Image (cartoon, rainbow, N blue to C red; front, side, top):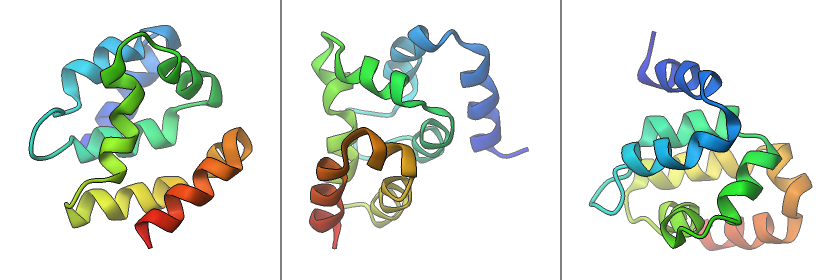
Length: 106
């Protein structure tokens, strides 16, 4: 079992509406390095509904977490975000946003 697998298992156990607190507590942000394993797990497990609920959050930190990860100077974070931007569910949710983010990482 990897850390990503552990996070995926934990996320599956949480009610979808309760991810925000878990992400806030475990993201590693603000800080010099985000929790890469958690980012990967959210990319794998997060549905459009979950992502939309985080975007609609009153917590500005949660709303901007993905943009912070996308803007990271850390090569590992940038690679992981590029991989997550290839997910079809993100493109279905907002193709224009995905294209803009992909261009910013190129």
